[in-house]
Image (cartoon, rainbow, N blue to C red; front, side):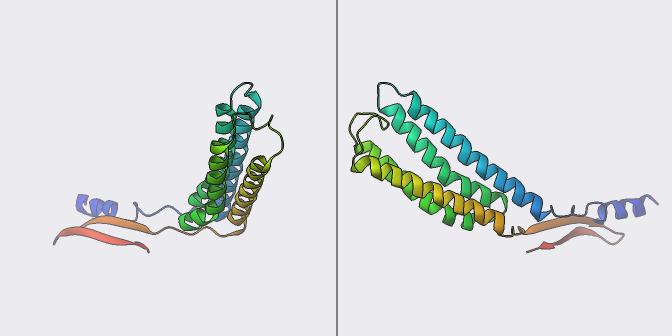
Length: 173
């Protein structure tokens, strides 16, 4: 009797896989996390820029912080749905715009970004930031409109019988 109970317990019926999560729930969570990353990094960056009274370093750090969030949001949102490569592709443009902002701001004068006269450098910063935000929004829209992929899963179940013991390997690939 004990052998039969042990056989049923180890056969895999008790250890079967849970049902996969609802794709709509995964998409909703991914979209919420992506929007939150965009909003929080932008708010923190703008607060750093606005509170910089005397120096340029804090304003520069704030501006790069806000644009770096635009690159991070589509990548994280796509990663939640299992679309890593797609996330990297949609983060490419915002990441390039963040690098552009960092280069322009690093080479600029020592004035704060909000106090300098409108010059070509400042226009470039605004263009890079706007294009980065647009790229992030497009990436998040892609998360909302695409179907999440199901990752491969592997199940290994130990088995035991009168004649031997072993493992049963199965899953989806």
